[in-house]
Image 1 (cartoon, rainbow, N blue to C red):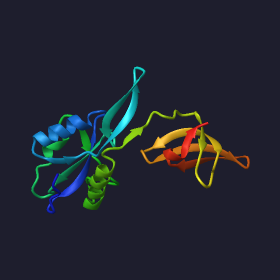
Image 2 (cartoon, rainbow, N blue to C red):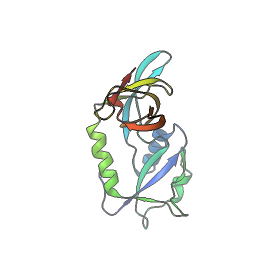
Image 3 (spheres, helix red, strand yellow):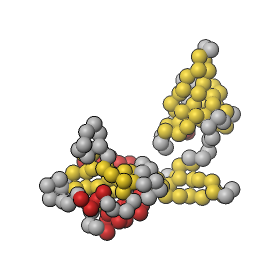
Length: 171
């Protein structure tokens, strides 16, 4: 993918599980799109399989020239819900630097597989980092691939810790 200097990036919302389809439809219309992807391990019917999934479910980036490109067909493209808007009626522009960073990070993680089903909400885990070595907690959820939320109880107070999934293990 070649980033063109005259165009800007925008964010589109897609229908659930239609990111790849929507991106294909937009590409067929001549638009430049980007949807960062990651490889994840998922359990399906008792078997662990490796899937390529969107890093941002329900979102696709599109590169447009606000003065030259025809935006009208985009909203009626199959799989697209609408442009993402922040605080108003105008679609939100995404800085090119963010797209470039995402592209670089996607390359860095190209060979890495994330196990997003390893821990379930409510599962007891042990934290293994310097600050909370061998502290037990209750797994809450993943926040992307880099963070996990774990509920711990310290000094009779419950707190949710934001830790790397690599720093937790089964209790």
